[in-house]
Amino acid sequence: MNASYLELQGIRKLFGDQPVLNDVDLTIREGELVTLLGPSGCGKSTLLRCIAGLTELDGGRIRLGQQDLSNLPPRNREVGMVFQSYALFPNLTVADNIEYGLKMRGVAKKERMLRCEELLALVDLEDKRGAYPQHLSGGQQQRVALARSLAVQPKLLLLDEPLSALDAKIRKNLRTEIRQIQKRLKMTTIFVTHDQEEALTLSDRICIMNHGRIVQDGSPESIYSAPRTEFVARFIGSYN
Ligand code: ADP
Ligand code: MG
Image (cartoon, rainbow, N blue to C red; front, top):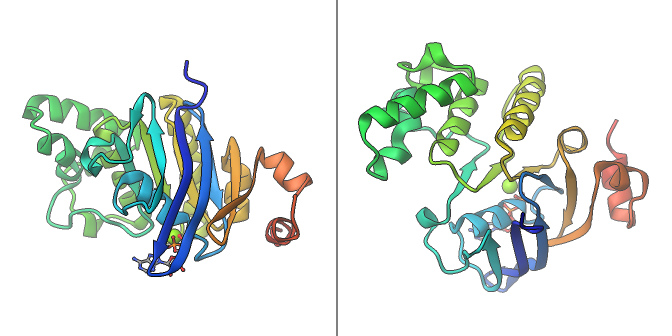
């Protein structure tokens, strides 16, 4: 097995003359869940968007498995993404939302339906296949978004604060569920949050970000017990 499955090397991004990502290096092993944790505006979403190909890089390289992603269009990157706000198609049913990516790829209806049923079971929404997004709770909508992103069997899953818009109780339940699904599928995942508790309970590894840099990268225990900078100590210390 490849020791580093995803490798980011020297990722740079400017908006105008503002550096937003400064030489970000990151390697992730297959099946690992790594959390990017940092304050609002530190560049977390921009980094995910660069990996997904939704934002162009100003420097650096991205490798996933054996493939150099740097110049591939988003649809060829085999990367799934779930956003903070519900980005479902409002005029499509749950099933059609989940099948959308497969349809775009020309997968036959029968196979799409089989795959959709598997995913509905995975996210526990079998009774909602015919419902429209507006009739679902926030948590249910995020489950559909997760199923939709998994439908095309991505090699990498990017979760951009998928729980932030939800109530505390639902957030906790869905957090546990996401982790169970991720482990069951052995899905290599980057989870973005600004919530320390979420990061500490969910992750194999945490990367603390500040001002477009990863300032510490380690196990939840090591980050919590041995913060390397004052910023990390303060940021983690505000948990409780
Ligand atoms: P985070 O997800 O950590 O909150 P972002 O990656 O969204 O941070 O943003 C990082 C910085 O880049 C912020 O200062 C933000 O204002 C800026 N930024 C993000 N997207 C754009 C854009 N499309 N144009 C200009 N500036 C942007
Ligand atoms: Mg963000």
